[in-house]
Image 1 (cartoon, rainbow, N blue to C red):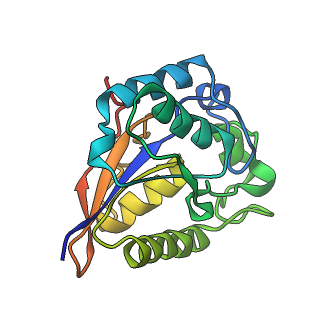
Image 2 (tube, one colour; image 1 turned 135 degrees about the horizontal axis):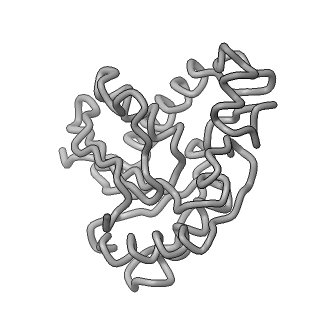
Length: 194
């Protein structure tokens, strides 16, 4: 059986990323730096290496995927995949990271937020769905920091990302399913092209 490969591309930068604000499911657009990061990613990523382009429904991910398609011939149109959505931070959305931790000492118990356990369940659903529906395919996904962190953390047995390590906007890591299990094939927290 051919391996199933998933590229985990984080969306380009937004103004809230600069301010270290929790975006969650709040629909924040890319800024000009984020658009440029997507254009650089389009020059690095070869569309012939991928069978399918999936994106989160949030505009910052959708626009990142759209820029890939606009900038480089050969991409198929992106398909919305709701399981790629960012973690909901509930009432904490819009807060700066340090304010979130100060206001909610248990950051896993914020009213209206998706818990880390729920996020892990959704991450497992995503992996199960992708290997079931697209076995043997190479799938590039455009998603978000918290979900990508969770997937990497699960497949690295908690070793990655390292404590305090931030995933750069337009960074990409790769997961592979060999027919039996998922592995983290490559981990790269830096923005593509940096």
